[in-house]
Length: 329
Image 1 (cartoon, helix red, strand yellow):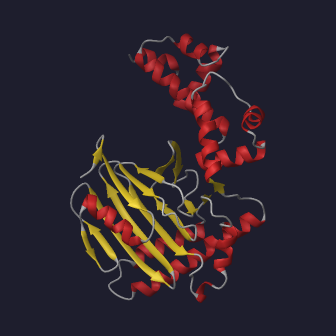
Image 2 (tube, rainbow, N blue to C red):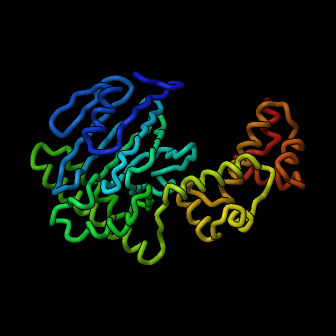
Image 3 (cartoon, rainbow, N blue to C red):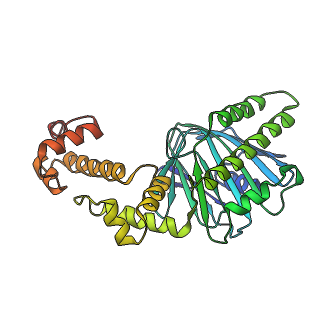
């Protein structure tokens, strides 16, 4: 088994469900049957099923890992092939070029639609129940049952560059996904019931994405946007003593304040201010825990002119006063 610092690492060439089964089986083993994989021994318990519905492959997975698990998906380099992933339960840290964002469970959006032209890595925390469904399809080879949804996806992916969209799961689709996992327990006739729910979810999501784009409430992140946000994120992390304004960052990186705020929130899952404040307090906590710094040294080094303001923000973010960290040493 491949592990890194006690983490399970699975590498999957992005594409059809068979790729996922091979990648998982190579690391975890398991029993493969027609349209399914079951892993029942070892640190991971996993059940995966998939079906094809007129050109759209539908997959649903349920698993629990006793160890943190990293899944790396390498690009498929096919701009026509689209991937729709939905977290029903659980969460993971989504990484692109070392830039992290949370997905699922009140995180930064639990629906991820993209065209597989850039590498994506997700890390699942240990001892977390995960329920996930996915759709994979060539937007030019969708069957007539989809009645124009090929045009919706062609509009969303109107270039050959890497692009991704994120969105929250609606209560309606959350209920439909619950039905799918409930139907999976039926002794027979579950496939048509599951397929009907899958078709409804797929259609709902596509139409919602189109509505959001038409109303200018949602924009896709191109690979250049990922790189830009990653660069801005690193600038903030490397200069935690400096309080950047949106206007300063947008001017320096040649992006409008509106797009910067939207794209940062879209990818990182929080506003620039929230991210900066959280990371500032995390760095303060790390320094205080070493015992090598006083509260005043940490506060002033991180750019605070008032120790009372530093202590107040530390308490708000970490739940304790900085002096309580130093006393615990």
